[in-house]
Length: 244
Length: 292
Image 1 (cartoon, one colour):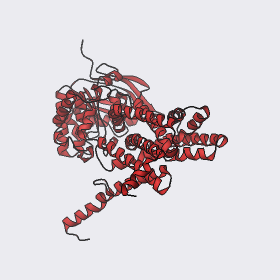
Image 2 (cartoon, rainbow over the protein chains, first blue to last red; image 1 turned 135 degrees about the horizontal axis):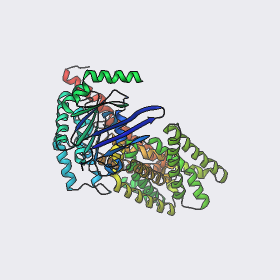
Image 3 (cartoon, rainbow over the protein chains, first blue to last red; image 1 turned 60 degrees about the vertical axis):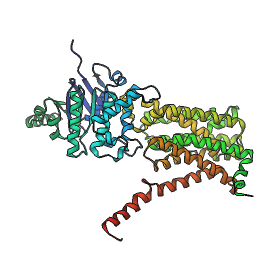
Image 4 (cartoon, each protein chain N blue to C red; image 1 turned 90 degrees about the horizontal axis):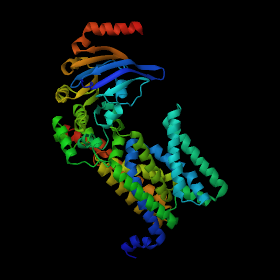
């Protein structure tokens, strides 16, 4: 018996009123894989994330995380979520270390009082993401790339196995991007599965093991070279326009 | 009369001691809640809950129940009604809030106008800490203790909810349940502060201490401490000033809080107007040698 894939999406269809956001989307992503999720604005990338996290309920289809229904996977702390920068209140009075500690809340008792294991997990996550020296800064005092790493560190401290990263390279300068790529590869090598949404096609080949091209449905799924090949893009989007 | 007498004598009167006690308790519990209220952006919700308890207070009076019972029922009920209208129609949330709380408030005003005197209405609307009864003090102390205990036990979850409800959801917590808990605390807090400030001004205590503290620190724990310090100090100064000036204590407390906010708004070390606008310009002028 083989272990179920890290992430399994089966026939997911999501409508917002009359708007079809996802149309019969199915994909399997294996363990220890970085998968780039590509697509234009409005192609359904965010909706797919929300469906996997069960923030949006699909009209049909199902999601399994390590073979488990999403609610059980969430309670086990398997799902890590790295939000888009625009969704974070950077003026909120929390420090880097406070945010990373929030990754541990699922492991704690009802009052979320951190124990030694929690402090150690947070220290290690800060170390791995290169944020130790910035641990006591308020989050708004960080650069774009450092801000992203805070939420990656939160997922590491949580011990998540499947990470959803929403546009992790938006508003990030090149040196920071290299640091993030290194951190994400380390996580992959440690066995984590990462689904990374981006519309930066150039950065995909260097980071991702595979890529998914989404346009309300899965247009292509394969190696970055296959998915990004000009004929695939052309054929995919050409086909899309004919059917639309 | 010495200076010390000036300060201590007013508080030898029993009605002043009682007013001071309820004002400080209300100031404390409201200040704690105000940190989450201002960070989430629930100011209008705070205003709504405080207005919506009016019919509950009136009905409690009619039925001979403790006023907190009716107030809690209507506070929590209005929050549920706002959520229901918002979810099941295309009306936006702020409109749903505005409709429900004004309707509840109007219901209270109409019932009072039928059964009671203008004096009672004025006390409920503007507060009457000097006339607080023993039974009311018992209710206020009990509710304050409950609210502070719950806030202390669940403060990390509530702050997580305020900061990142999606993460709360992703790790298997229920943002909906945390929201309900916080709204329940808000309703309890409004009831505590009702006697001091009255329905119309309660919302000041639910916003100003948190907003003031937010300008003074970047740490949540310190924000709570500063908010409580500002709020309780305003209660003491407000009650005292109301005695000296022979004016209403509720109004004085809010004015003192507003002054504290204005001071922080102008002079907070990092987030105040002076620090953000004037000082950087001066520093820049100095480094470039520009005398302008």
